[in-house]
Image 1: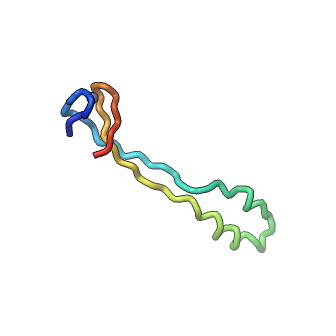
Image 2: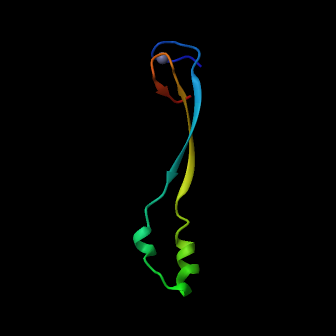
Length: 65
Ligand SMILES: [Zn+2]
């Protein structure tokens, strides 16, 4: 993979994990033990995505394939 900026051909493929999802901590304000199961279901909204991109050590550019 060549860098589109400086044409260096030793770019590095980087994998980065990003947590995607809304912050629902305010919705989980319930402390009742009976509610734990229901609140537990609602807390699974965040999702981890893996983003992959190329990084050029020569000029510091990041670009997609
Ligand atoms: Zn470069």
